Image 1 (spheres, rainbow over the protein chains, first blue to last red):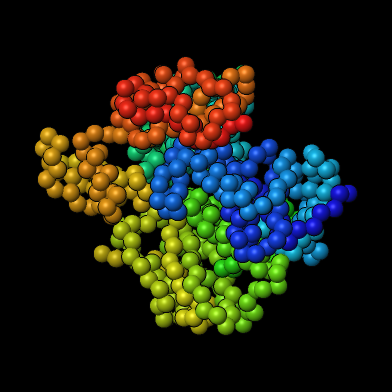
Image 2: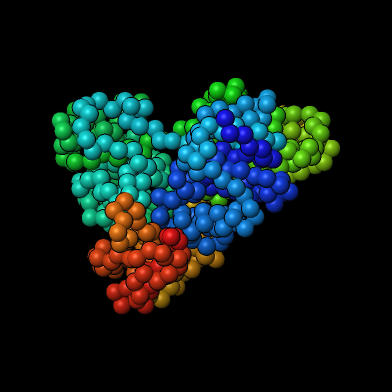
Length: 419
Length: 118
């Protein structure tokens, strides 16, 4: 086995891994390595050729390639090293070793001071939501269709039905239309949009693509190729009303039905995983239950904005560098962030208190849409931070900033309905 | 005339209510920031969108160059622009922001590369 030694090793070269590596280097880590299984850095942003990235961070509207190139340029300038076409097989949290196979070196064992997990997420498939019917050609997850169309010059179909109103689904509705396909409809099980409103406006409304809320695909038809799908409205229990089922001819179905954090490595390394987010439980420094192992980006929780991924990954990279240099503030107490009314989960899950007070951004998602809401963080009955929002929506992440100096014990985040 | 416009500048998606006649705005409410106010004012009279797509790279079958319009284009020109871009191919190497199609469809807006290709 080929041996290497680094201060910080980052698993994954997408937006999370890139931001973590750059910030680790800026914090003073001498040798930083990114291990990436694809043939280039940038992750999913390589196929996200559409605009909408970087509005918060760079105050301009960038496409995916423009966004990640700002990080790869920085990584190159700072001397971040990387192994491409290399698949990590195992993370040893005790020995701080990462084992991977590399096209260039064969089996590689990298010993390091700290590890950042930035593996991202993958798409839920048709099997994950169990759609009945045959198994013809023409069924794709929206993201794999996006890769084929945008990176590999392969058009996936001519007449398309999209299941799920997530952002990737809506963006692919526009993309397929621009490339000459007919998008018959976007079908969404819930009675509200899963993705961002701006994507409905510019991807569906602009092209007159119908959005069928509270509907689902009940059956897929076709032997060699998809010939059509049955679509039916659902009742309040999400059960299809079969009497109103309709046949919709199409040759392609795209599934945009959710993302799953990719945590096979984390689970194998016995890192504690949250049952709600399916990602590692982390503190405000993005440190997992294993000391010296950090995690950031969609492997922790699925984000809707890459800008958020970059900022939490910078935190992970910064503290991974500090850990490697033996410079993490001594913990005096750990408190848990608990979900209150209309809060599904909070990231970070815990806050590590030390003598130095710091500000912490708590990112969270609500369970249901609400107009006129007050976001509150409190310890016991004492409110330590609050903020008003015109509306909250499960598809759009919220955040509230707290000062650790004010924390007296476990913290609850809740959404209060305001009239 | 009164129009409810959903702002697409950021993910918040504010609903901005604009009133006015023949392109002149008389009242505008509901915006969350200055950019939103500008967007809704522009959207009230003319719709513009950033166009992104890909172009072929000569001699490569399974690789594409991602491109964008340097500025937002009139919405009604988007399909015409796509028809022009469809016929374009480039020779590598290409640098990020190299102009791929100049003044597309007479809009005064260029189509530029968003990625450097060796």
